[in-house]
Every structure is written in C-alpha cells, then in structure tokens.
Figure 1: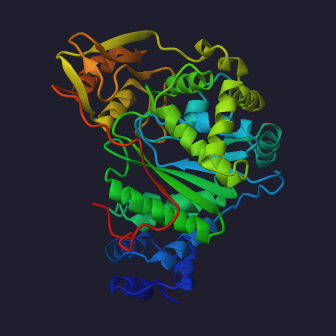
Figure 2: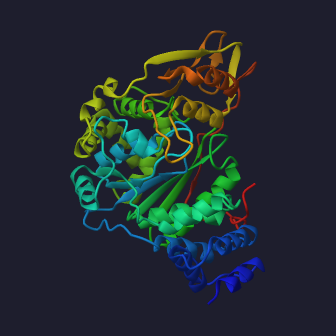
Figure 3: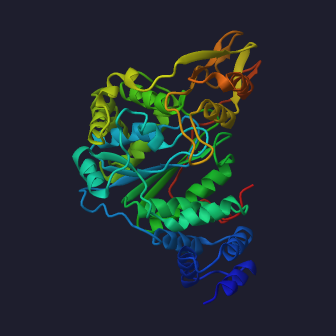
Amino acid sequence: MHIPEIILKKRNGGTLSRPEINHFIDGYCAGDIPDYQAAALLMAIWFNHLDHDETLALTLAMRDSGEIVDLSAISGVKVDKHSTGGVGDTTTLVTGPLVAACGGKVAKMSGRGLGHTGGTLDKLEAIPGMSVSLDMERFRRIVSACGLAVMGQTADLVPADKKLYALRDVTGTVDNMALIAGSIMSKKLASGADAIVLDVKTGNGAFMPDPTAARQLAGLMVTIGNQAGRRTVALVTDMNQPLGNAVGNALEVREAIEILQGRHAGDLKTVSLALAAEMLLLGGQATNIANANQMLARALESGAALRHLARMIELQGGDPTVCRAPDRLPRAQHIIPVTADTAGFVAGFDTAALGSAARLLGAGRLTKNDTIDPAVGLWMRKRLGDRVAPGDILADMHINAPRNQADVTQRIKQAVMIAARPPTRPALIHDRITQPVDATIHRELT
C-alpha cells in the first residue's frame, strides 16, 4: 500500500477503504508520510469529499492514534457535551452542574480557547485556585464524588488531529464537513463518554454561519457518534448575538453562577436547559423532555445545581465560596460604558466583531502562547429587538489597560446595529438532529 496511489485514487473520485485510511493516519503520525503528501490527500478530499463510511473510518483512525480514556470505573452512563463555539457561550458551566444535580455523570475533557475569549478551561481558571490539570485517577474520583469534573485534554489524546489540523490550517482545507466532523468526533470518542450531546452553533458569530450547513454538520456528527456506539444527539442553536450577556472569562463564570443562583434568565439559560435535558435523556435519568425539564427546574430552585458546581470547584482545588459570592472572582479596574448615538431598535449584531473587541481587551488569544486577562471583557446591556435611546448603554467594557479602549468602543458601536423598526428574531433553537440530514452532507462549505 503506497500513499501516492491513495492520493491518486481520491483525486480521481474513488472511495478509500478503511485499510487505506488507517495507512494514511498511521504513517502521517509516525512521520513516514511527509506534509506535502498529506496536504495533497487533504486537498483531494476537499474537492471529492468523503462518504459516510470513509468519514467514519477517518474518525476512528484518528481516535485510535493516541490514548483512549477509560471511564468504566465511574458508575452509570457518562455523558459529554460539545459546543462548536461562539460568543458568550458558557453552557458547560450551567449544564454540567444541572445534570450532576439530577444524578447524571459529566466527565468532560476540554480545550483552551483560541480567538475572542478563552475556552472552558480558561474560564474555570478564572476561579481562584482552580486546577484543570488533573491526572486520570483524580478526574475519575471527582466525577464519582460529585457527578462532574472538567479537565484539560491529555497530550496523548488524538495526536493525529493535532497534526492534521495544523496542516489544514495552512493549506486551505479547514472548511470541509467530513474533516471538521472527524476532528470533533475523534476527540469526543477518545474522551470515554458513553453518550454525546452536540451544540452546533449557526449565525454571524458561529463557525457555521449558514443554518443548512450547520444542520448537515450536526447530522454527520450524530451519524458518526451512533455508528461508533455512542448515543448522540445534536441541537442547532442560534449565534446571531452573544448567547449570554458576558463576553470574557471571569464575567462568564459570574453569569453562569448567577443563573444557577436563580438571578438570571435569558438565552444562555434557555439553551443550557435544553442541552441539559438532552443529556438527562441520554443518561437515562429522564424518560422524556417534559420529565427532564421538571427535574432541571427542581435542581435550580433547590440550589442543588449550584452546590454541585461548588463541590466540583472545591475538589479541583478552587475557592467554592465564589458560588455564593461571585465578587471574589477577578474584577477589572475600570468599567466603562459604551453608549448609543441614535434612537431605534437593536436590529442586529456583528457578533464576531464583539468577540474580537473582547479579545482586544485581553479576554482571548490569537496564538496559543498569548496570556489571557481573566478579569476583562464585555457585559452586553442590550439584546436583539430592544428599544434604544441616545445615551443608553449598549455594553460595559471591563478593562485593566486603556491602550485599546478607543478602538474597542468604536467596534462595539459599529457591531450593534440600530434601525427604526424592531427585527424579526431568529429561533434560538433551530433544530434537533438525531439522524443524517441529506445526501449533500459532504459538500465543501460555502
């Protein structure tokens, strides 16, 4: 079996066999296949796509390229949640405690953010003393003790994805559904969960702006998960405005805590509850969505979800008192309002631009070596459809260094679009996906 023959086969529209895909992944990870040959095959895949069998084979080969986490020592069904990312997306910090409070087991391995704000690990590290660098034995003990733990992905988890993604990033082959699905699902399958809930974002602040493409990606990932023996379901959710009010690490932790305290409603809470209900269904704690919603309401009202978050924080070395006193989280030196210049209604957001504005304040990173300031970010004061008068506060900037203040102020004003009439708000949850969407699922993204 020779890699030039595999490249030619896919270039000419052929279907790769599982042994051929395994040969490619094994050889590339071992260093026997150079970057230029791997890049040629990736481009052939981009143009000619992979079918369902090829995509599953690629995903499993990537999964098997490194460590596969064993969570069998934890009793019950272990459920994981994955979001494709967005602005103000803090669902993990709400869903995890809710599910744990209802008897579920959430053993989550996460990555760090690269973009507008930090990932789940960066948000958790805003909590004083909190550690996400756990060995597997401690990780399993914490999940068994309180139903929930979040740790960083180990270096040995899916090394094929790390190598391939770095190559895709510089060869124009990122935006292919099969390659995206393989990247995401190989990590989810290697992380050891028995069931997976996917939150696929769509809108101008999402990786998948087009709802049709988002549904197709969700369907492909659901198919892979189920074919690999993991019960998998996906929600396609809206990202045409920040999901929560907070955009920034400590600010997002604060908002999650205040939701669990019963002090906040809104889109972040709504999506978190919908995801948590799906997790309870897959975990066997609930028999239907109505039953799951009743359980989640009790977990919120009784304070049980907040107590589970505090317990997880404590077991991971953090200060659990932040759950009753969020002011103990890092706070910026200055809070500066950004005000509206005109009257009307909030007709739209450039959501990605708001994320970039938060990054300029220090809430995110452009490279993996950049340092995040956990205290800084934005707190949005207006939502889609809200009436606005001149001088009304659109957002508060939480800043420590003034160097980008003027630039960020201007970006926020431009990102919040004000019109004479209120808009028609898009659905918050576009779809629930439990099977493939259609036969065009492997087309390149446009």
